[in-house]
Image 1 (cartoon, helix red, strand yellow):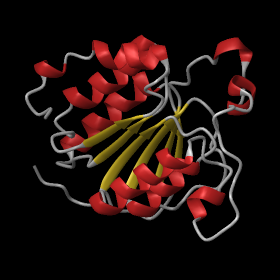
Image 2 (spheres, helix red, strand yellow):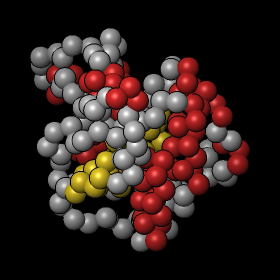
Image 3 (cartoon, helix red, strand yellow):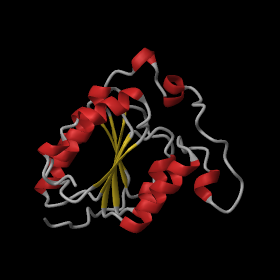
Length: 196
């Protein structure tokens, strides 16, 4: 499969397939509040540990950056942007990123990010089909969006079913969450010969 660069240095926001937010929330903070597992930023020389926009532990941040720095993906996907901390890291190490979230853009986005506002279950298959048609593949995907068992399974299945994801590293966040774990366990990985 050709893995040509997606091109373009412009940030594009697309508001498509917007799903209803639970509990009438209109922002990430209204939906999630202040998650207790997010460490307070550390002052110092490691920017990822000082960034309050990361909604992940220091170990998770270090693991993601370590994988990205080794992989150097041409095209990445991030499902679930939250405050944009992990998106900044994914964008810094990727040629281009397609980011998906129900909420508005969290802040100014890096120039190599196309932001898709709406339901990943509607938007992701479309973007994967476009990439596949263009002969492009995704090298990296961070799945941290819908935390229901059905939603997590659908995001993973959508990626695995696409020929744009033949050589893709997929990371799932919040795997200790019972619903997320249940969704991941429900994926029939053996049905996908490309999964190793």
